[in-house]
Image 1 (tube, rainbow, N blue to C red):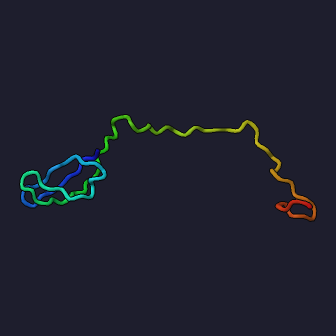
Image 2: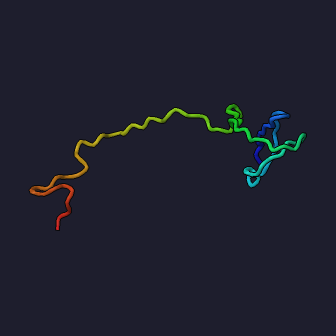
Length: 85
């Protein structure tokens, strides 16, 4: 259940836990019972908690032998991308 922030014009800011189904319904101020506006704020993300995987240095891969011949052979009087009939 997310925590939403609201702002009442007379009483100020307050927070309220609401379900996602209730996210679009108007919220009344708990003290003066006037409809409050929802305040959009940045989510609270803790990057030092260890929940995100640490970035590792990419591994270098080296082939033992390099191929000198091309991967396809060119046919005489033909196109290399066509299959012979």
